[in-house]
Length: 280
Image 1 (tube, rainbow, N blue to C red):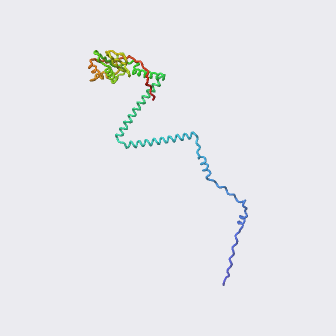
Image 2: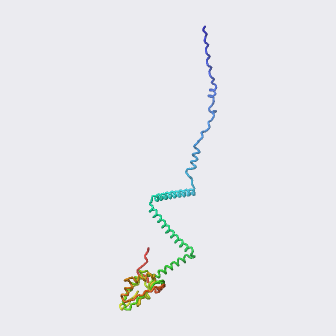
Image 3: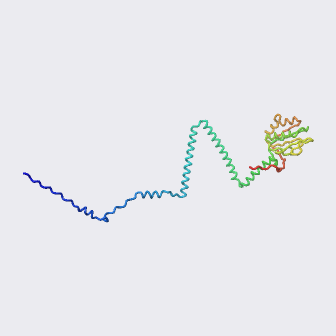
């Protein structure tokens, strides 16, 4: 027997109430979403606070000083390294020479330092610097006066006496004697009562005798000389020198060394007519 097939039941339609309710919701009742957070706002505020930089004058000065100090240290380190590199490749002889030069330079600097400290001490210890300056000026004027013949001079020296009984000693012989004494280091000279200075001159008189600076000088001619006797005496006694020349003209030269001689003849200064101090 054939059984009849039962018809399958049709599926029931799904409820549409939820969709209808969702569709019925008005837009004003929908929930509002929270605003988005700006994550770059903090970075922008930090940049605005740091740039452009706001420096005070004191901070700027400190920054410049630090920069200058760093630059100077860098230059010094570099120069020191370069110098060490040069010395590293130098020969032993060059190193010894460099060391000697440094020692000599140090000694010169130490000497200059000692002289400067001594001068400074004199100035500091002087109760009156103007008085000290006047004393130095007075001392210099005295030294120049000895050379110019306006101040008396004394010190060790010799006395040269030339006796000329035959009257054969001429002006040129006395001039040669003077030049020999000057070359030997004479510092002050007097012939009889005439002071010898830079412009001293000798002339022969027609009737015999000699004039020195226009003054007649009679023999014996007496040279009073301030200087080192150990230098003056040998200079006059050299072979063919002053003493031998005078003796060849029937004159007699006598040299006496003394610990103290006095040159007291003075000259009157004359104002130059043409010569003027030259500007530097």
